[in-house]
Amino acid sequence: MHQRTLGTSGLQVSAIGLGCMGMSAFYGTSDDTESVATIRRALDIGVTFFDTADAYAAGR
Image 1: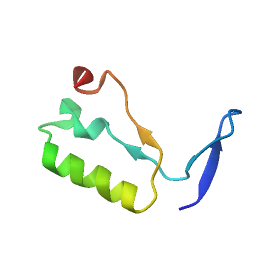
Image 2: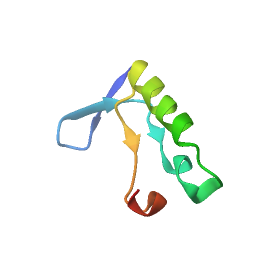
Image 3: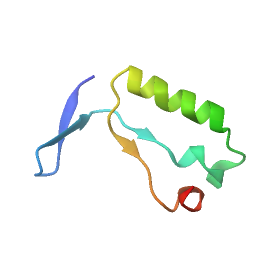
Image 4: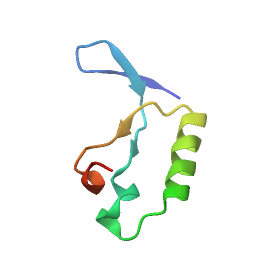
């Protein structure tokens, strides 16, 4: 997985990130088992950049 420098901090993250908003109720019913499997697969292929926010699923 290609890496990119995030801002000026020097932090390296994967060039491809995973948006996690769809793992909450924003886009309909969520499936925790499928969400965990998706995150694990992303980690397996080298994803280190995850788009998350406390607002997703009210911080759950």
